[in-house]
Length: 280
Image 1 (tube, helix red, strand yellow):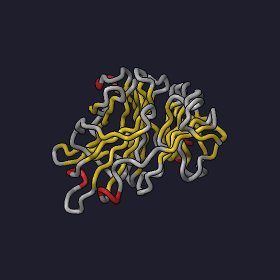
Image 2 (tube, rainbow, N blue to C red):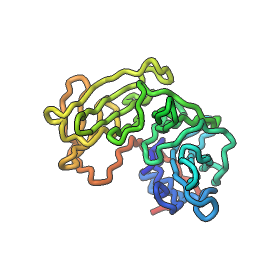
Image 3 (cartoon, one colour):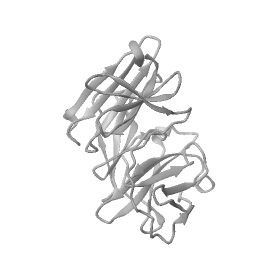
Image 4 (cartoon, rainbow, N blue to C red):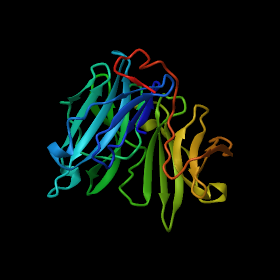
């Protein structure tokens, strides 16, 4: 499950596999569209690492699947390898290659995306002062151009650190979950960009330490509309939510399983009258 946007869910097995299967699915009307093969494949370009996103262009009323394929050269570091950006337009029914340049970076292929204000956001890495640090790579779905945002602090590449982007509860900005679990330290920081695109507005909302019931939390997944944060427990994989004001935990009565994706969803009639969509 790559993402959910305006009633459509994007499914793919392209991450860490060379399978090229992409589906846009509307559970509400029980219809789906199977996308054609993308432009970059193993048979044509060799090995690659893929990052995928789903966004909506409100001006042209078009859903777009964005695929960033970083070509792997065994003689080069992955950070120096070229990335080919492609966009699938649901309105046009085809893939096209973007001419817009990406900033030098490595995109974190399996990381979550956040789609806010017509812009896709992914976590990425770049070399800064001799160390690899995280930042936010952005893609404006309407004008099809790339940009970047800074994170609230300089998070460096660390095997014990896991970062995850999310959409804020009011869907007007982005949030960041930073989880560290090492022998000497363990915490989960929850950050919110209070005013979208204003880097100084990053605010740390909560720090969860391994004391009390939160000691078994695997990590944060997303914000709810209520402002609560959904998390997964480490021991029984149950989904719980935490109120950031009262710090009270509440069971959601859902077992997440070993592989769990929690996405915001709203019903729509997209694909209802589409001749290219299949029913089930």
